[in-house]
Image (cartoon, rainbow over all chains, first blue to last red; front, side, top):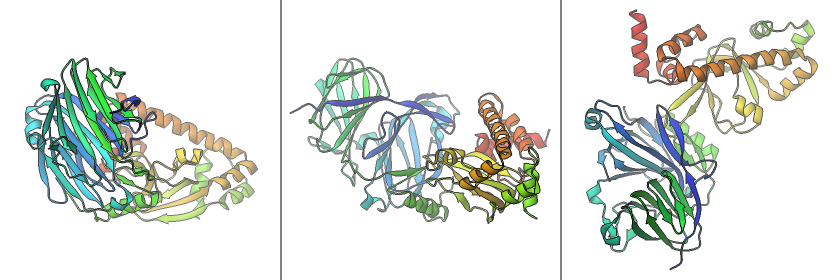
Length: 287
Length: 193
């Protein structure tokens, strides 16, 4: 197998999202997107005291893509206009195909607000191709126990297969665009090998740690690592305890028009999305 | 005559002859916008400035989680535009809409250039307006970093004395960068003190 060389390492910048400060490796000046992944937001890690008001993303619409939340620490309460009401805890995932339009809210839970604790999540926006932008909305929520774990290097590496397949382990998510998504946990002085598909775009986001990826040193947390289309094998050697999100998907190579919570192909479609939202076509969700 | 309002506004900084007034007024377009109507949408290029005769305009953006962020309100006797798009010719990143039924004069960028050429005093007029806008923006940025929400709300009332009672609480909260619930608490505190 041939090595897939590192194209670029992009350290996330801090951005203000309402009252919260979060980290965003892309979109940025250094990295516009990793088609079909158009946005990555890293919240935390935070340590919330008891009686906190962690995460308050009240009712809001989406259309034309899939907002996906990976919960590394803490818990997220998702509600939507399809009738889903779902609390997902540490190690779980909330994968929403917004398609033609849906309203949802993402909040901290009452229990977490009362007790406090560690909180760390990543939200990724996975773009949908033109032919699927108006697909029926779907929500898939899975807890840690629903997600198969593959081990490497004598158990020093754990890979949770959220979507896609590693050997016999298949992720529970049904991705309509064939996305692979894994979360990877490595102990110090461990080695992991991932086989990627050379015809798809692949990326790693290192939440924290210090590693060498296919010979390239990455020593700063909150780094997005993108790859050239020249091989399949990605080898990670961790010098310290390290944590990753791996994403792989087919590049859509379509024009991207994004504004606020909508991702379409043209500005006119964005205006239409906004109108449809305002006229209630994406449903009504009380905060 | 509707033009009186805009001429009075201009007379605050420069004086015009009868001919100059007529020349300027010939480029004004009177428009009425109903509550909620959009004057400039994101992605469009801003090619004009607006003078508010009555009502109130809002200039705002929407973030990825659907939250609105109000940059400014323009009440009667105020000028506004999306300066980013107006100056650079790039698509607007903000939206301008009518918060309540609003009457405006619109003046196109190319017509404004004709006015500057024929009546150079207008350069002075807009220099003063832009100076004031820069001072206000600087104050707004520094106050969000160092002034309490209560004080910022008091400053808001002072700045928007005509319109603050007509603007829904959630929009004022968005302008101040606080939650509507928190603004409600501040209002109650002020009423009872």
